[in-house]
Image (cartoon, rainbow, N blue to C red):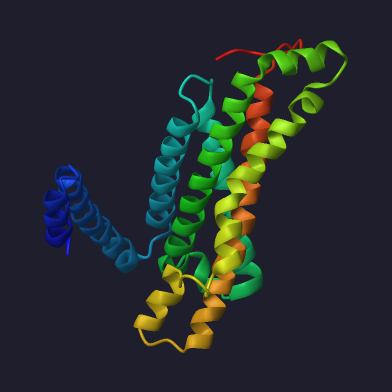
Length: 243
C-alpha cells in the first residue's frame, strides 16, 4: 500500500516520496518497539512497570504539546505535564471506580495502558491547540490587554475573551467527533472490537465510554493549562509579561 502511494506521488510529481517512505519506516519501527515494551509490561504486570510506562507516555506528550505552544515560557513543561496528567488521572480514577468497578483493573495494564494512552494523547492535542491559540492571542493583543488593565480590569477580566476563545478552539476536535461518531466514521475502539468479533452493542458501549471520557479529559486539561498560562503572563504587580 505504501509502495502504491509512493508510486502515485512520483507519477503526479508531488515530491512526497521521501516523506512517505520515512513515515512508513518510522511507523513500523516505532510500533514494533512499543509492541515489544507492552508485551513485557503485560506479561510482568508489575505496578512499577505500569506507572513507569504511563509516566514516559505523559512526559513525551507534554514535550510535544509544550513545543507546539511556546518554548520560552518558564516552567511550561511542568504546567503541561500537570494539566495532562491530572486530567488523565481524574478520568482513569472515575472509570475504574464507577464504571469498571473491578479491583484488578487498578494494576492491570490491559485497561490502564490503552485508556491512559488515549486520554493523554487526546489531551495532548487539545492542550497544544488551546495553549497555542491562547499564547498567540495574548502576544498579538498586548496593547488591548494593557488598556483593560489601565481602566481598572483585573488580569482575569482582561484575559476573559482570549481564554474563552482558546478553550473553545481546543474542544472543537472532540466536539465535532462526538457529533458525527457512527454516522461519518467508526472510531478505533469500536472498529478494533468489531474486527476481533465482539458483539456490536458491547463495542458501541465501550466507544460511548471512550468518547465521553475524552471530552472530560480534554476540557479539564485545557482549563488547567489556560489558567496556568494566564498566571505566567503576569508578574506580582499584575504587569503583562512578554516572552
